Length: 427
Ligand SMILES: Cc1cc2nc3c(=O)[nH]c(=O)nc-3n(C[C@H](O)[C@H](O)[C@H](O)COP(=O)(O)OP(=O)(O)OC[C@H]3O[C@@H](n4cnc5c(N)ncnc54)[C@H](O)[C@@H]3O)c2cc1C
Picture 1 (cartoon, rainbow, N blue to C red):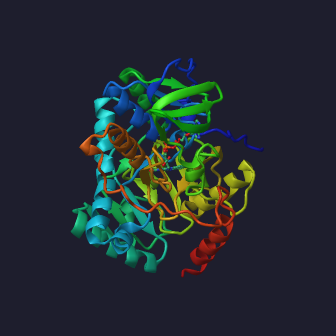
Picture 2 (cartoon, rainbow, N blue to C red):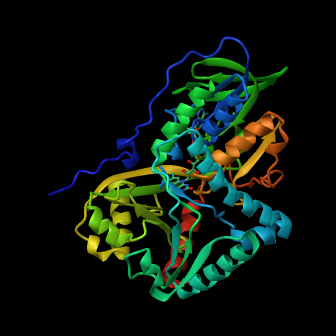
Picture 3 (tube, helix red, strand yellow):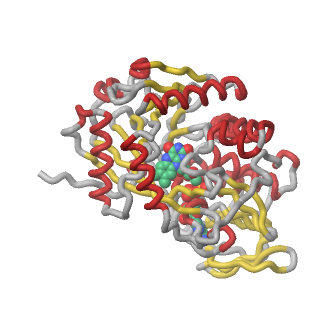
Protein backbone atom coordinates (compact mmCIF):
# COMPACT_ATOMS: atom_id res chain seq x y z
CA UNK A 1 0.00 0.00 0.00
CA UNK A 2 1.36 3.46 -0.87
CA UNK A 3 1.42 5.76 2.10
CA UNK A 4 0.19 9.35 1.62
CA UNK A 5 2.71 11.92 2.80
CA UNK A 6 1.63 15.41 3.89
CA UNK A 7 3.70 18.11 2.15
CA UNK A 8 3.26 20.74 4.86
CA UNK A 9 5.26 21.10 8.10
CA UNK A 10 4.27 18.68 10.84
CA UNK A 11 4.27 21.75 13.14
CA UNK A 12 1.32 23.30 11.30
CA UNK A 13 -0.97 20.56 12.61
CA UNK A 14 -0.83 22.22 16.04
CA UNK A 15 -0.22 25.85 15.00
CA UNK A 16 -0.87 26.71 11.36
CA UNK A 17 0.35 30.25 10.56
CA UNK A 18 -2.57 32.58 9.84
CA UNK A 19 -2.81 35.65 7.57
CA UNK A 20 -3.52 39.09 9.07
CA UNK A 21 -5.83 41.46 7.22
CA UNK A 22 -5.28 45.19 7.55
CA UNK A 23 -5.06 48.53 5.77
CA UNK A 24 -1.74 50.23 5.17
CA UNK A 25 -1.39 53.36 7.30
CA UNK A 26 -2.34 56.61 5.59
CA UNK A 27 0.36 58.79 7.16
CA UNK A 28 4.03 58.17 7.98
CA UNK A 29 4.95 55.60 10.61
CA UNK A 30 8.08 55.17 12.75
CA UNK A 31 9.23 51.75 11.55
CA UNK A 32 8.34 49.30 8.79
CA UNK A 33 9.60 45.79 9.53
CA UNK A 34 9.78 43.57 6.45
CA UNK A 35 9.49 39.85 7.24
CA UNK A 36 7.35 38.37 10.03
CA UNK A 37 9.54 35.51 11.22
CA UNK A 38 11.27 35.41 14.61
CA UNK A 39 13.66 38.27 13.71
CA UNK A 40 11.02 40.72 12.51
CA UNK A 41 8.50 39.84 15.22
CA UNK A 42 11.07 40.17 17.98
CA UNK A 43 12.16 43.57 16.62
CA UNK A 44 8.55 44.74 16.28
CA UNK A 45 7.80 43.64 19.85
CA UNK A 46 10.70 45.69 21.24
CA UNK A 47 9.93 48.75 19.10
CA UNK A 48 6.18 48.77 19.79
CA UNK A 49 6.89 48.07 23.46
CA UNK A 50 8.83 51.37 23.54
CA UNK A 51 5.81 53.21 22.11
CA UNK A 52 6.83 53.44 18.44
CA UNK A 53 4.31 53.23 15.62
CA UNK A 54 5.33 49.94 13.95
CA UNK A 55 4.01 48.04 10.95
CA UNK A 56 5.29 44.53 10.18
CA UNK A 57 4.50 42.91 6.84
CA UNK A 58 5.11 39.48 5.34
CA UNK A 59 4.85 38.36 1.73
CA UNK A 60 2.94 35.25 2.78
CA UNK A 61 1.64 34.61 6.29
CA UNK A 62 3.60 35.41 9.47
CA UNK A 63 6.10 32.61 9.95
CA UNK A 64 5.74 31.28 6.41
CA UNK A 65 9.54 31.24 6.09
CA UNK A 66 11.95 29.21 8.21
CA UNK A 67 10.29 30.24 11.48
CA UNK A 68 7.44 27.73 11.22
CA UNK A 69 9.43 25.07 9.36
CA UNK A 70 12.57 24.56 11.42
CA UNK A 71 13.59 21.70 13.70
CA UNK A 72 12.89 23.72 16.85
CA UNK A 73 16.37 22.91 18.14
CA UNK A 74 17.58 25.70 20.39
CA UNK A 75 21.35 25.88 19.93
CA UNK A 76 24.16 28.18 21.01
CA UNK A 77 26.97 27.41 18.56
CA UNK A 78 27.93 29.35 15.44
CA UNK A 79 29.10 27.72 12.22
CA UNK A 80 32.78 28.83 12.37
CA UNK A 81 33.17 27.34 15.89
CA UNK A 82 35.10 29.08 18.66
CA UNK A 83 38.49 28.33 17.04
CA UNK A 84 37.26 29.67 13.69
CA UNK A 85 35.94 32.85 15.32
CA UNK A 86 39.20 33.46 17.18
CA UNK A 87 41.33 32.91 14.10
CA UNK A 88 39.11 35.19 11.96
CA UNK A 89 38.49 38.04 14.43
CA UNK A 90 41.12 37.69 17.17
CA UNK A 91 40.72 36.31 20.67
CA UNK A 92 38.75 39.13 22.28
CA UNK A 93 36.23 39.67 19.48
CA UNK A 94 35.94 35.95 18.68
CA UNK A 95 35.10 35.11 22.30
CA UNK A 96 32.68 38.06 22.54
CA UNK A 97 30.78 36.80 19.46
CA UNK A 98 30.62 33.24 20.81
CA UNK A 99 29.42 34.50 24.21
CA UNK A 100 26.54 36.37 22.63
CA UNK A 101 25.44 33.22 20.82
CA UNK A 102 25.36 31.50 24.22
CA UNK A 103 23.47 34.46 25.67
CA UNK A 104 20.85 34.27 22.88
CA UNK A 105 19.44 31.13 24.57
CA UNK A 106 18.97 33.01 27.86
CA UNK A 107 17.31 35.82 25.89
CA UNK A 108 14.92 33.35 24.27
CA UNK A 109 14.08 31.75 27.63
CA UNK A 110 13.29 35.15 29.16
CA UNK A 111 11.16 36.17 26.17
CA UNK A 112 9.13 32.95 26.34
CA UNK A 113 8.67 33.34 30.11
CA UNK A 114 7.81 37.05 29.96
CA UNK A 115 5.23 36.55 27.23
CA UNK A 116 4.05 33.28 28.74
CA UNK A 117 4.33 31.50 25.37
CA UNK A 118 3.16 27.89 25.44
CA UNK A 119 5.62 26.30 22.97
CA UNK A 120 6.97 23.11 24.60
CA UNK A 121 10.22 24.91 25.43
CA UNK A 122 12.63 22.70 27.37
CA UNK A 123 16.34 23.15 28.02
CA UNK A 124 17.07 19.44 28.05
CA UNK A 125 20.32 19.71 26.10
CA UNK A 126 21.79 18.51 22.85
CA UNK A 127 24.03 15.66 21.76
CA UNK A 128 26.55 16.03 18.96
CA UNK A 129 27.43 12.42 18.01
CA UNK A 130 30.56 11.84 15.92
CA UNK A 131 30.43 9.61 12.85
CA UNK A 132 34.22 9.22 12.67
CA UNK A 133 36.98 9.08 15.28
CA UNK A 134 38.62 12.00 13.54
CA UNK A 135 35.48 14.12 13.96
CA UNK A 136 35.32 13.13 17.62
CA UNK A 137 38.90 14.26 18.27
CA UNK A 138 38.36 17.73 16.82
CA UNK A 139 34.91 18.07 18.46
CA UNK A 140 36.42 17.18 21.84
CA UNK A 141 39.16 19.80 21.38
CA UNK A 142 36.53 22.46 20.54
CA UNK A 143 34.42 21.44 23.52
CA UNK A 144 37.40 21.82 25.86
CA UNK A 145 38.04 25.24 24.41
CA UNK A 146 34.40 26.26 24.95
CA UNK A 147 34.57 25.10 28.54
CA UNK A 148 37.79 27.08 29.08
CA UNK A 149 36.82 30.34 27.36
CA UNK A 150 33.03 30.40 27.66
CA UNK A 151 32.49 28.35 30.82
CA UNK A 152 30.28 26.00 28.76
CA UNK A 153 28.67 23.10 30.62
CA UNK A 154 29.50 20.18 28.29
CA UNK A 155 30.61 16.58 28.56
CA UNK A 156 32.90 14.68 26.22
CA UNK A 157 31.47 11.18 25.79
CA UNK A 158 34.01 8.55 24.77
CA UNK A 159 33.00 5.43 22.84
CA UNK A 160 29.41 4.34 23.33
CA UNK A 161 28.74 6.57 26.34
CA UNK A 162 26.56 8.71 24.05
CA UNK A 163 24.00 5.89 24.14
CA UNK A 164 22.61 7.34 27.38
CA UNK A 165 21.11 9.93 25.01
CA UNK A 166 20.67 8.03 21.78
CA UNK A 167 19.61 4.48 20.89
CA UNK A 168 21.87 4.13 17.84
CA UNK A 169 25.01 2.12 17.09
CA UNK A 170 26.18 4.45 14.32
CA UNK A 171 28.54 6.72 16.23
CA UNK A 172 31.97 6.58 17.88
CA UNK A 173 31.55 9.21 20.61
CA UNK A 174 29.91 12.56 21.18
CA UNK A 175 29.63 15.86 22.98
CA UNK A 176 26.73 16.49 25.33
CA UNK A 177 25.55 20.04 25.98
CA UNK A 178 23.31 20.98 28.87
CA UNK A 179 22.35 24.61 28.23
CA UNK A 180 20.48 24.14 24.98
CA UNK A 181 17.24 22.34 24.10
CA UNK A 182 14.13 22.49 21.97
CA UNK A 183 10.73 24.01 21.37
CA UNK A 184 7.74 23.77 19.04
CA UNK A 185 8.68 26.33 16.37
CA UNK A 186 5.20 27.14 15.08
CA UNK A 187 3.74 27.52 18.57
CA UNK A 188 6.64 29.85 19.45
CA UNK A 189 5.89 31.82 16.27
CA UNK A 190 2.21 32.05 17.17
CA UNK A 191 3.09 33.25 20.67
CA UNK A 192 5.38 35.92 19.22
CA UNK A 193 2.60 37.16 16.92
CA UNK A 194 0.38 37.52 20.01
CA UNK A 195 3.14 39.37 21.89
CA UNK A 196 3.67 41.78 18.99
CA UNK A 197 -0.02 42.57 18.73
CA UNK A 198 -0.24 43.01 22.49
CA UNK A 199 2.66 45.48 22.30
CA UNK A 200 0.64 47.51 19.78
CA UNK A 201 2.38 46.81 16.44
CA UNK A 202 0.27 46.34 13.29
CA UNK A 203 0.74 43.23 11.23
CA UNK A 204 -0.36 42.77 7.61
CA UNK A 205 0.20 39.52 5.72
CA UNK A 206 0.20 38.79 2.88
CA UNK A 207 1.79 42.08 1.85
CA UNK A 208 5.09 42.16 -0.03
CA UNK A 209 7.66 44.96 -0.07
CA UNK A 210 8.68 45.35 -3.73
CA UNK A 211 11.08 48.33 -3.65
CA UNK A 212 11.99 51.39 -1.60
CA UNK A 213 13.48 54.87 -2.02
CA UNK A 214 15.17 57.23 0.41
CA UNK A 215 13.11 60.39 0.92
CA UNK A 216 13.38 63.31 3.32
CA UNK A 217 12.92 61.98 6.89
CA UNK A 218 12.84 58.32 5.92
CA UNK A 219 11.81 55.93 3.18
CA UNK A 220 8.99 55.34 0.74
CA UNK A 221 8.29 51.62 0.43
CA UNK A 222 6.21 50.21 -2.41
CA UNK A 223 4.25 47.15 -1.42
CA UNK A 224 1.65 44.96 -3.09
CA UNK A 225 -0.99 46.89 -1.08
CA UNK A 226 0.29 50.40 -1.91
CA UNK A 227 3.00 52.71 -0.54
CA UNK A 228 4.08 53.26 3.02
CA UNK A 229 6.25 56.06 4.37
CA UNK A 230 8.41 55.10 7.36
CA UNK A 231 11.17 56.87 9.28
CA UNK A 232 13.08 53.56 9.52
CA UNK A 233 13.02 50.25 7.65
CA UNK A 234 14.26 46.89 8.94
CA UNK A 235 14.78 43.95 6.58
CA UNK A 236 14.21 40.69 8.46
CA UNK A 237 13.89 38.56 5.34
CA UNK A 238 16.59 35.92 5.98
CA UNK A 239 16.53 33.22 3.24
CA UNK A 240 13.40 34.59 1.53
CA UNK A 241 14.63 38.06 0.54
CA UNK A 242 14.23 38.17 -3.24
CA UNK A 243 14.87 41.36 -5.19
CA UNK A 244 13.47 44.07 -2.89
CA UNK A 245 16.92 44.82 -1.44
CA UNK A 246 19.75 44.13 -3.90
CA UNK A 247 22.47 44.89 -1.32
CA UNK A 248 21.21 41.96 0.76
CA UNK A 249 20.43 39.81 -2.27
CA UNK A 250 24.13 39.91 -3.25
CA UNK A 251 25.29 38.88 0.22
CA UNK A 252 22.81 36.29 1.46
CA UNK A 253 22.49 32.81 -0.07
CA UNK A 254 19.18 30.98 0.38
CA UNK A 255 19.88 27.27 0.84
CA UNK A 256 17.19 24.60 1.13
CA UNK A 257 16.84 22.29 4.10
CA UNK A 258 14.22 19.53 4.32
CA UNK A 259 12.60 17.69 7.21
CA UNK A 260 10.53 14.55 7.64
CA UNK A 261 8.30 13.37 10.45
CA UNK A 262 7.57 9.70 11.02
CA UNK A 263 4.19 8.26 11.78
CA UNK A 264 3.48 8.07 15.55
CA UNK A 265 5.64 5.35 17.12
CA UNK A 266 4.38 5.50 20.69
CA UNK A 267 6.13 6.87 23.73
CA UNK A 268 7.99 3.69 24.65
CA UNK A 269 9.71 3.32 21.28
CA UNK A 270 10.64 7.01 21.21
CA UNK A 271 12.02 6.76 24.74
CA UNK A 272 14.23 3.86 23.61
CA UNK A 273 15.60 5.95 20.72
CA UNK A 274 15.97 9.21 22.70
CA UNK A 275 16.31 8.16 26.37
CA UNK A 276 17.12 11.72 27.57
CA UNK A 277 14.93 13.62 25.07
CA UNK A 278 17.99 15.61 23.90
CA UNK A 279 18.20 17.21 20.47
CA UNK A 280 20.75 15.59 18.10
CA UNK A 281 23.01 17.02 15.36
CA UNK A 282 25.66 14.73 13.88
CA UNK A 283 29.18 15.52 12.71
CA UNK A 284 28.84 15.06 8.95
CA UNK A 285 29.37 17.92 6.50
CA UNK A 286 25.96 16.99 5.05
CA UNK A 287 24.66 16.80 8.58
CA UNK A 288 21.50 15.20 9.90
CA UNK A 289 19.67 16.88 12.77
CA UNK A 290 16.94 14.99 14.54
CA UNK A 291 14.82 14.87 17.65
CA UNK A 292 11.70 13.42 19.21
CA UNK A 293 8.52 15.42 18.57
CA UNK A 294 7.47 17.43 21.65
CA UNK A 295 4.58 15.01 22.28
CA UNK A 296 7.10 12.14 22.44
CA UNK A 297 5.43 10.21 19.61
CA UNK A 298 7.51 10.69 16.45
CA UNK A 299 11.01 11.17 15.12
CA UNK A 300 11.66 14.40 13.20
CA UNK A 301 14.77 14.47 11.04
CA UNK A 302 16.24 17.15 8.79
CA UNK A 303 19.10 17.72 6.41
CA UNK A 304 19.91 18.35 2.80
CA UNK A 305 18.47 15.22 1.17
CA UNK A 306 19.66 15.51 -2.42
CA UNK A 307 22.35 17.47 -4.25
CA UNK A 308 20.07 18.52 -7.09
CA UNK A 309 16.43 19.64 -6.75
CA UNK A 310 14.07 16.69 -6.28
CA UNK A 311 10.38 16.02 -5.65
CA UNK A 312 9.16 15.95 -2.03
CA UNK A 313 8.70 12.17 -2.35
CA UNK A 314 12.32 11.68 -3.45
CA UNK A 315 13.54 13.97 -0.67
CA UNK A 316 11.47 12.02 1.85
CA UNK A 317 12.94 8.73 0.58
CA UNK A 318 16.48 10.05 0.87
CA UNK A 319 15.97 11.33 4.44
CA UNK A 320 14.18 8.10 5.38
CA UNK A 321 17.27 6.20 4.24
CA UNK A 322 19.41 8.29 6.57
CA UNK A 323 16.92 7.69 9.38
CA UNK A 324 17.28 3.93 8.87
CA UNK A 325 21.09 4.17 8.93
CA UNK A 326 20.76 5.74 12.37
CA UNK A 327 17.89 3.55 13.60
CA UNK A 328 17.76 0.33 11.47
CA UNK A 329 14.72 -0.80 13.48
CA UNK A 330 12.69 1.96 11.76
CA UNK A 331 12.90 0.24 8.35
CA UNK A 332 9.16 -0.44 8.32
CA UNK A 333 8.23 2.98 9.71
CA UNK A 334 6.26 5.31 7.41
CA UNK A 335 7.02 8.99 6.87
CA UNK A 336 3.94 11.12 7.59
CA UNK A 337 5.20 14.60 6.60
CA UNK A 338 7.90 16.10 4.41
CA UNK A 339 8.55 19.83 4.07
CA UNK A 340 11.34 22.21 3.11
CA UNK A 341 12.44 25.73 3.90
CA UNK A 342 15.30 28.12 3.22
CA UNK A 343 18.14 28.79 5.56
CA UNK A 344 20.30 31.86 4.88
CA UNK A 345 24.09 31.96 4.63
CA UNK A 346 26.40 34.94 4.29
CA UNK A 347 29.88 34.29 2.89
CA UNK A 348 31.39 34.47 6.40
CA UNK A 349 28.88 31.92 7.75
CA UNK A 350 27.84 34.25 10.60
CA UNK A 351 24.58 36.02 11.44
CA UNK A 352 24.65 39.64 10.35
CA UNK A 353 23.21 42.84 11.76
CA UNK A 354 23.79 46.29 10.36
CA UNK A 355 22.70 49.29 8.38
CA UNK A 356 23.32 50.10 4.72
CA UNK A 357 22.40 53.52 3.32
CA UNK A 358 20.12 54.01 6.31
CA UNK A 359 18.28 50.68 5.95
CA UNK A 360 18.62 48.24 8.87
CA UNK A 361 18.93 44.47 8.51
CA UNK A 362 19.35 41.39 10.73
CA UNK A 363 19.63 37.98 9.05
CA UNK A 364 21.88 35.13 7.86
CA UNK A 365 21.61 32.60 10.70
CA UNK A 366 23.13 29.70 8.73
CA UNK A 367 20.48 27.20 9.84
CA UNK A 368 20.90 27.99 13.56
CA UNK A 369 18.56 30.88 14.18
CA UNK A 370 15.88 29.73 16.60
CA UNK A 371 17.63 31.54 19.46
CA UNK A 372 19.83 34.01 17.53
CA UNK A 373 17.07 35.49 15.34
CA UNK A 374 14.91 36.80 18.18
CA UNK A 375 18.04 38.08 19.89
CA UNK A 376 19.39 39.97 16.85
CA UNK A 377 15.87 41.24 16.00
CA UNK A 378 15.78 42.76 19.49
CA UNK A 379 19.28 44.23 19.02
CA UNK A 380 18.29 45.74 15.66
CA UNK A 381 15.28 47.36 17.36
CA UNK A 382 17.52 48.84 20.06
CA UNK A 383 19.84 50.17 17.34
CA UNK A 384 16.88 51.84 15.63
CA UNK A 385 15.98 53.35 19.01
CA UNK A 386 19.64 54.47 19.34
CA UNK A 387 19.79 52.80 22.76
CA UNK A 388 23.29 51.89 24.02
CA UNK A 389 22.17 48.28 24.72
CA UNK A 390 21.86 47.87 20.95
CA UNK A 391 25.61 47.39 20.74
CA UNK A 392 26.58 43.81 19.93
CA UNK A 393 29.75 41.89 19.10
CA UNK A 394 28.11 41.23 15.70
CA UNK A 395 28.38 44.95 14.84
CA UNK A 396 30.96 45.96 12.26
CA UNK A 397 31.72 42.48 10.99
CA UNK A 398 32.54 42.33 7.29
CA UNK A 399 29.50 41.51 5.15
CA UNK A 400 31.18 40.49 1.90
CA UNK A 401 29.67 39.86 -1.50
CA UNK A 402 31.25 37.85 -4.31
CA UNK A 403 31.63 38.92 -7.94
CA UNK A 404 30.11 35.62 -9.10
CA UNK A 405 27.00 35.81 -6.91
CA UNK A 406 23.87 37.81 -7.72
CA UNK A 407 21.20 35.98 -5.75
CA UNK A 408 21.18 32.48 -7.26
CA UNK A 409 23.57 30.13 -5.43
CA UNK A 410 24.37 28.04 -8.53
CA UNK A 411 27.60 26.76 -6.94
CA UNK A 412 25.93 25.09 -3.93
CA UNK A 413 25.46 21.68 -5.63
CA UNK A 414 29.21 21.67 -6.39
CA UNK A 415 30.00 22.35 -2.73
CA UNK A 416 27.54 19.59 -1.75
CA UNK A 417 29.32 17.10 -4.00
CA UNK A 418 32.57 17.99 -2.22
CA UNK A 419 30.90 17.55 1.18
CA UNK A 420 29.33 14.23 0.17
CA UNK A 421 32.75 12.92 -0.95
CA UNK A 422 34.36 14.07 2.30
CA UNK A 423 31.61 12.41 4.33
CA UNK A 424 31.89 9.17 2.38
CA UNK A 425 35.66 8.83 2.44
CA UNK A 426 36.26 10.50 5.77
CA UNK A 427 38.63 13.30 4.85
C1 LIG B 1 14.06 23.17 7.52
C2 LIG B 1 14.75 24.09 8.49
C3 LIG B 1 15.17 23.60 9.73
C4 LIG B 1 15.80 24.46 10.64
N1 LIG B 1 16.11 23.97 11.89
C5 LIG B 1 16.63 24.80 12.81
C6 LIG B 1 16.86 24.35 14.13
O1 LIG B 1 16.52 23.22 14.49
N2 LIG B 1 17.47 25.19 15.01
C7 LIG B 1 17.81 26.47 14.66
O2 LIG B 1 18.36 27.20 15.49
N3 LIG B 1 17.53 26.95 13.42
C8 LIG B 1 16.94 26.17 12.50
N4 LIG B 1 16.63 26.65 11.27
C9 LIG B 1 16.87 28.08 11.01
C10 LIG B 1 15.82 28.99 11.65
O3 LIG B 1 14.54 28.50 11.37
C11 LIG B 1 15.97 30.41 11.09
O4 LIG B 1 17.28 30.87 11.34
C12 LIG B 1 14.99 31.41 11.69
O5 LIG B 1 13.69 30.94 11.65
C13 LIG B 1 15.12 32.73 10.94
O6 LIG B 1 14.05 33.57 11.27
P1 LIG B 1 13.84 34.89 10.43
O7 LIG B 1 12.70 35.62 11.04
O8 LIG B 1 15.12 35.64 10.33
O9 LIG B 1 13.52 34.39 8.95
P2 LIG B 1 12.24 33.66 8.34
O10 LIG B 1 11.47 32.93 9.37
O11 LIG B 1 12.70 32.89 7.16
O12 LIG B 1 11.31 34.86 7.90
C14 LIG B 1 11.60 35.71 6.81
C15 LIG B 1 10.24 36.20 6.30
O13 LIG B 1 10.45 37.29 5.41
C16 LIG B 1 9.37 37.29 4.49
N5 LIG B 1 9.76 38.14 3.37
C17 LIG B 1 10.86 38.01 2.59
N6 LIG B 1 10.90 38.99 1.67
C18 LIG B 1 9.83 39.78 1.87
C19 LIG B 1 9.33 40.96 1.24
N7 LIG B 1 9.96 41.53 0.22
N8 LIG B 1 8.18 41.50 1.72
C20 LIG B 1 7.52 40.94 2.75
N9 LIG B 1 7.96 39.82 3.40
C21 LIG B 1 9.09 39.25 2.96
C22 LIG B 1 9.20 35.81 4.16
O14 LIG B 1 7.91 35.53 3.64
C23 LIG B 1 9.48 35.15 5.51
O15 LIG B 1 8.27 34.81 6.21
C24 LIG B 1 16.03 25.83 10.31
C25 LIG B 1 15.59 26.32 9.08
C26 LIG B 1 14.97 25.46 8.17
C27 LIG B 1 14.49 26.02 6.86
